[in-house]
Amino acid sequence: MTRIYIAGHRGMVGSALVRVAKQRGYSEILTRTHQELDLLNSQEVDKFFAVEKPDWVFLAAAKVGGIYANDTYRADFLLENLKIQINVIESAYKHNASKLLFLGSSCIYPKNAPQPIKETDLLTSELESTNEPYAIAKIAGIKLCGAFNSQYGTNYISVMPSNLYGIGDNYHPENGHVLPMLLRRFHEAKLNNDQTVTVWGTGKPKREFLFADDMAEACFYLMENYQAADIGELINIGTGEEISIRDLAYLIKKVVGYEGEIVFDTTKKDGTMLKKMDVSRLEKLGWKYKLTLEEGIRETYNDFINNPDVRL
Ligand code: GFB
Image (tube, rainbow, N blue to C red; front, side, top):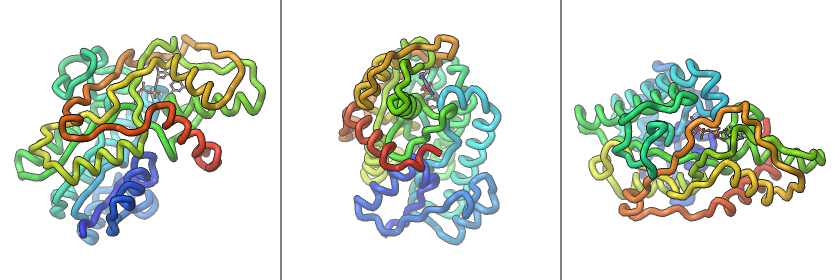
């Protein structure tokens, strides 16, 4: 039976990977909390791999956050993500993991990349400043996986998801991503009978959103059916559909049932204006997303309401 290690299992993507692994019948699923295994500590990581010897590794552990967190904690985002990636990828090699899936992000692509963004657009022009440290760390992870594959014949796959949302997201009032932050803000405005809800920026930027459990299905689909050689250096995972932040806000307003007004705080940064990905390569490999954005937001809102601890 394949022994699977899911690094970052308590995060939104990691917990979706655990759910999907169980649904697909995997029984040897290794997970460690931050207290049990500090992924920033190379000795601890090496010892874990030496003892547990996982066959497959899903590297979903990372320091993540929205535009404000990325732009504020620039050194932390670069340093911690480089350390996590180097420790896990090197130990996977040293202890003969047969396959590894590395989770990147659509923010690795140039801020003015032609739309929809293709995998070949990587490093063709400058990055978006607000999340450049995170993007550089993720690009380094992609390049490290590719370098191991070329020098040592390993089978490491790098996947680039669009903006993700879903069960167990981070609802931090400052450091979260746009969708969970707006969901929480509209919910609290409804409870408090607030007249208005503020949305950051102009509302003009567009984003592509993928439900985390759809993303987890795509990860297992690729790991079960393809090798790194079939996929190339990286592959986009998304819906290929985009929505403006403004329209997203009105959609969330509808799902939450908030009756007040929406105002835009243009003193806050917009970040990248467009981030729609070309997902045709993944579709050719036989995978397509399931949940529409409205269905996904409704499921996420139910999780938010029924699990108050996600708001911590
Ligand atoms: O999810 P988000 O913070 O990050 O989306 P990015 C930011 C966009 O949503 C900007 C607008 O245009 C913001 O102005 N926005 C509106 C808000 N209201 C809010 C709000 O209340 N909170 C937030 N956070 N944004 C991230 C990268 O970029 O994309 C990460 O920073 C990662 O590293 C992620 O790559 C996928 O989409 O701009």
